Image (cartoon, rainbow, N blue to C red):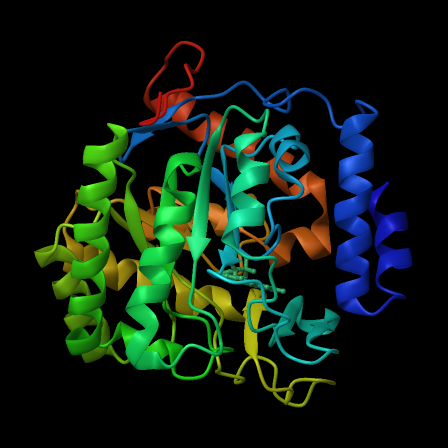
Amino acid sequence: MYALARSLLFALEAERAHGLTLAGLRAGHRLGLLGPAGAAAPAQPVELMGLTFANRIGLAAGFDKNATCVDAMGALGFGFLEVGTLTPRSQEGNPRPRVFRLPRARAVINRMGFPNEGVEAAAARLRRRRYAGVCGVNIGKNAATPLEQATADYVAALQAVYECADYVTVNISSPNTQGLRQLQQGEQLRPLLQALLAARADLAARVGWTVPLVVKLSPDLAADELAATAQVIRELSLDGVIATNTTLDRSGVRGLPDADRPGGLSGAPLRERAVAVVHALRTHLGPDMPLIGVGGISSAADAATMFAAGADLIQVYTGLIYRGPALVRELVAADYASRRQATPQGPPQARHNRP
Ligand SMILES: Cc1cc2nc3c(=O)[nH]c(=O)nc-3n(C[C@H](O)[C@H](O)[C@H](O)COP(=O)(O)O)c2cc1C
């Protein structure tokens, strides 16, 4: 079924195909074609960061930037979703075309630059969602905001989404917003995270619950930079880490059409590096820091490798473009089978930090 849809979608410009996919998913969900949430497989819930995840398979940020498709994506069987990246004010992003498929490598290059409708529009949609599973919100800074004022953007975004997010991801690893990745370096990262933790403490006191804060890292940090970044994350007792975002490295796609387009590469050629970063982070962060692995996962075997490297949960994006919803079913079923042997449990009880 998806093979037919895919050949139609792949005939279109990538971003237009994505817009049609989102519209199709919304329509399919309205018509009841996607089934009720969680029906794809029985679940083995996982407790992490004070949240209950129905399974360990999540949707990565960027697929549903504006939270227009949360109920439909939830119905595909994901254990959690992440919307965004959202910035305080709406913005256009970079000029189109800005997304390119590299089918021979099962990869994508994008330089979207956070096009989004802004935090308020997405927050309003999130408040109306029916999806009962975990939904994280990924936040960033507006392109027009100078790097020195980035903290104010992240704090404003955190405040806007706090009451409708199950966790918040601080995105400092997109290669498509100028200078953003500098924020990963220790001397810039520490004050940014401290400001966000202080803002979170104020919000928690006001609303009565604490939303976990996680940070999303690049696969392109050198070994010593990664160690230094992990040290800051540990010292500040952040709630978790997502690794990785897209890469600037082109060694896995050299010579292919569109391989030299500027932007971040995702999909199969990223997998080995993303797994290595997760493995290194697990060593640096110790056994207890929640770690979400993402990058190039497009089969149950890939997922198993990411879990073996130390990930507690995983996310997918590019694999969905190439394999469609069958990938979610495969990953959720394999997750269930692998953990059923380990810990038999009853049905999941959705639990949130928020009431
Ligand atoms: C078209 C596209 C847009 C993306 N947009 C975002 C984004 O807005 N924020 C973010 O944190 N990651 C974004 N990502 C990165 C993904 O969330 C993920 O980290 C990366 O693609 C690696 O996973 P994958 O190989 O499964 O796609 C985007 C990826 C793609 C392909």
